[in-house]
Length: 318
Image (cartoon, rainbow, N blue to C red):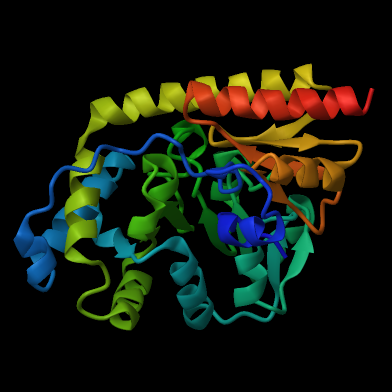
């Protein structure tokens, strides 16, 4: 099974592919927030509770919240999902649509259902916007529900208009740092929930859930509003450019977000292999065999490389 970022595995399967590999398989922004030099103390000392609180306050402010006691920093959204499964045992669990496989791993008993049929579930989990098709549930529809709701907004930073925050009406909201800021290696995310659940989550995470360098970088990045505005415009433009490129090569757009596009291809497995042989890794799906997800190229050279590979594919299939 392929997931995002497996360039080492792809290089082993396609040793003749030209390098370096162009990784378009993750949906992580190709433009990273410029990390400054990290003070030596951030590496040498244990992270302080005060510094962690400053990070959570900076994130809360960026999300439009005025109560940082309802937010907890976590070492990545994936860990948050697994911990929430321990804190929120439920018999009737619904995952909205085909989405992130980690939800089913954390709640194996969950049923995959459309939104209209999942409202009666004890616990409802959704990605909003959804990955990989970018489908959006209107925030007001989620706010009206009374069941336990986990809303994963991993790709909402570039599309703040779709977020439930700050008016979440009791829902548990997950946010990711690395995808929007292009710094996935930091492993940083946030859970927004009512205070009792936040306290339980912090007890599970312990006294030092986030590294000192991650705290320093995250705090500074969330305070850099000018860069965030530039990033949103850049991602939106890149997504539109990618949609146009795919369509120009006969590939049907199947949705997506500002971070990535999903496309239909007549022979998606063949196209995946063709791109791998060109040293370009995209994301295939077992449950969507006719579709591929592509992230946004970050440089003109990367755009040209993708366009050349797609043009060769379309000519080969004319």
